Image 1 (cartoon, rainbow, N blue to C red):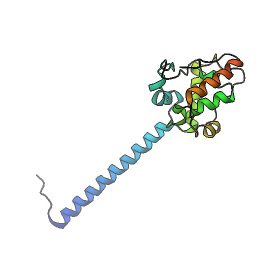
Image 2: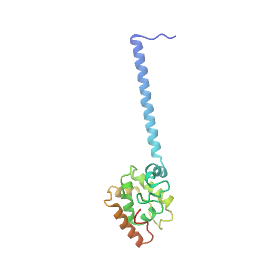
Image 3: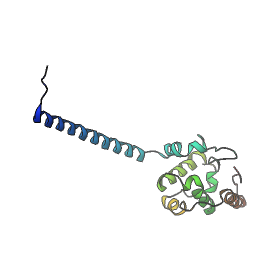
Image 4: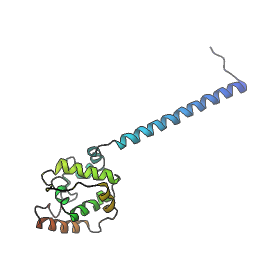
Length: 165
């Protein structure tokens, strides 16, 4: 059996031991924070869709009829015109998303490649970080009315998504 240390020497040893423990806990917390930040930075566009968009738009980007617009077989059509692109980047889900401008552009492009390949016209441009940054800062005042106007313009130049969702 080991004797308990007493007095100043014992108190100093205990204090030093506690300080090392606190240092280790702080260091472990810092390592964990770095790991979490780096793993979030490495999320793929598909993972970002799953984390931030799928709850409303669904696993296959189908939306909810009458409530949430589909992105599948629709997004690519909006990407063909400046008005459509402006609309997409200013709808509430995109405009207020926690995703960075780069991440949002990547998610939208991933959605276009994954669920809209047949809807993309020849030469359709991918969303860029600069485009997202320039447009998403101003929310739409009348989302459904703007959608209807954009869809009328798309219908005049080819196939268009439904005016309502």
